[in-house]
Length: 97
Length: 289
Image (cartoon, rainbow over the protein chains, first blue to last red):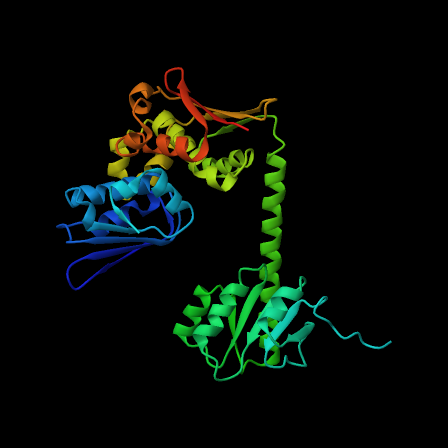
């Protein structure tokens, strides 16, 4: 499940809870539809699992901001999602904290 | 015969904080401190946390959160079951809240449901452990599947045939789902992205599984444990295959950033060796001892 919150400066926070997989695709797509926000925060601290579809969603977001690493921050949390981000070297593509 | 006084070692319900009720239908013992209950009583099944006034709720929940990591159910006694309090308690791993004013019959029913909940959890946990231990004994095995639900179930069993199953499940699931959707059901990567965007992916998979054109297609999986201790998995579908040389020729990181992310992730997460055979409809994964 994905909850999105728009900040006063137009930035968007996406909180992922539970399984971050293909079932989140429509929610994710709906949340990031429209003109790009100045910054995005993807909070995975509540995610239990992520699959290759989830990596694809993050890459779509990166494309949306013109591959500007500083505009997408991923809060990696712990466990499997964090391990997948490390394996995929996503810290090279995003600001992963 | 004198009535035995329950002790912590035989108790099913430990009541921490205030004195426990004397009219409970279930054996209840008192523990002054949470630490006493969680460290000295291996038989504790339900922990009722009933603290006195003046204790910060946040602190209570913090302690309960630590307690809830142990295999018992936590019930929090509250003066008033307000919505925000119930939400915070649920986030802290509390099974349910017991209003202090609840009549004895309602209290006993709630404690009964807390005991049942834990029994169900323990049965489930012990079944998982037994299945994992049994799967680790596999020397040869064959499976056939068609659906995504079956893929999810089988991924867990296949992963349990090797070490660190929790870490490996995702990779098995990626390969099995690939075989079903891209192999047997001929859904291309572009089709899938469009279907996912429109929220129609799952329905399309179900529709194709029921369509006579694809209904008889299966995915076959075999497991072979070698004398060396290495475990080899072969996953084969009835599809037309794909140009696997194009997908797997790049570095792992490069693949993660374009097509074949599922395959790349499977290689990274689940296998020591992964390669395709035939027309690309058969993938072999090896886990070395």
